[in-house]
Image 1 (cartoon, rainbow, N blue to C red):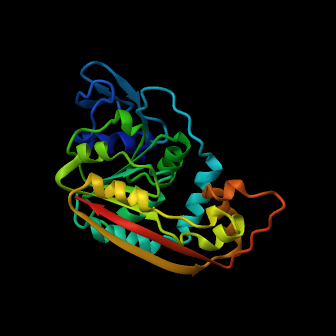
Image 2: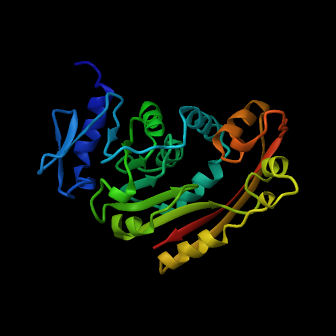
Image 3: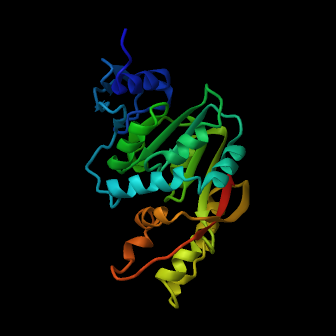
Length: 277
């Protein structure tokens, strides 16, 4: 017997974890049909792509994020720049069976965190950007990848022991609906010195050179009754060849003028990790 195709591998993972899914149109339970789609009792059907991911959007969605951005993001994350943050997140979620990464992009953070978990633990990534999910499925076939919108969620209530929200917009009502009774939500948000060397060159002497996450943190603290907060700060050498990728992956870089030379030999990661229960 030959090796399974990526579509068959994705279908098998979904079959093994069907209880996580609910139809985003009618909220009914779902079944895998012919290793090619998820179908609910009301015959709403969602195709499993040949790359192994599933598209569960109920309407067209436009993303401002390009294939090039996700490729750059993977290069930067694979360099180890966020290893310390990922290790902290892994420690906070502890021993769990189900992890959902919301706004997962090309999946690198989730895949690297899941590599630290037990074999029985399944990771699911969701993003509205098809290009990100396509890259995630191509590189990380051991996780479930879903193009979807949390405003019309394709998941069943109380399904996930840990929900991750790493440098991405949040939907707290949906996070709480999807969390198991003892589950947690882990949100990573920039702190004031995040990528400060880049910010200093792009936004010198302007208000954008300074950043505060106070409003985001306050909103998180309003959403959860039990909140922990840890600041993680470190500065790492930055290889010259990573500078273009860093500029491509961050919205700060999108505003760089063509004649502006960016010279970086180190970069600071400065984030708050918020844990809500």
